[in-house]
Length: 288
Image (cartoon, rainbow, N blue to C red; front, side):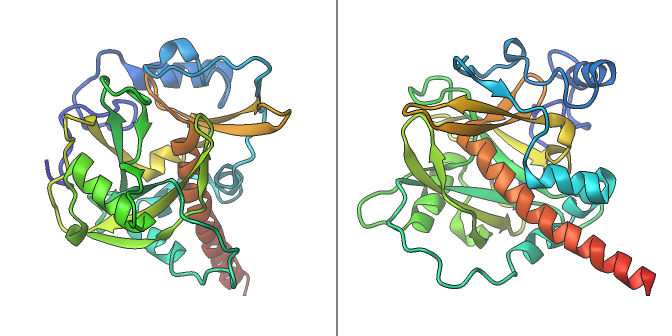
């Protein structure tokens, strides 16, 4: 499969041009939102392929705290979505200077790559490459995630992310332009750190799942992932009395949650900050 091509079966609720899925997921989601209000009715655990633990004491956040949700409300979702379709927003977000003297830390336990394809023309919007982990895997079978894995001895986090991406979806480093990294994310189930990297994909290289590890490769439009009506948060009590915000993206019959959803929130927050700043500058020029 080429990066510019639609996969044979992707998430129907996100890909309008793909064949109809087993159920009319977009219609189901739209009906639920129109009847119960945006954000209400999302997160029906029985509707998802993935199994989400029913943690005692969990609480649904009535108003999500993610920055991209606030930004979408402030500048308008349509404007934010239009900006997300163009990969130049992604590139601009990682052109910003990093904070001085970041705190030192050791190597993470694992690293992943968030590759973005398309976004170079009006006909092909920017899409995030996501994998569905193989059903036969012992760890997180069937979950939506990003290609990546644990560091090998002597390996850097970036080298691990690139190696694992090649192994899982055959996307070779020569076709990837790494833009930068996001903050490390802690995987709740193992209490280990994961370093996410963000990249664009040059040309139309081979991108398809390695059956040993991946059941499906999904190309998900950033603009639709950023729809606040798909996103919700829960607060989970953790051992020791701590509380942790858990992130979820309701994609119809699928849900992205946990560490992968947290990474997506970090990315969308970063993009939203740049989009909001751009909107503010435009308004300022208009007032002048």
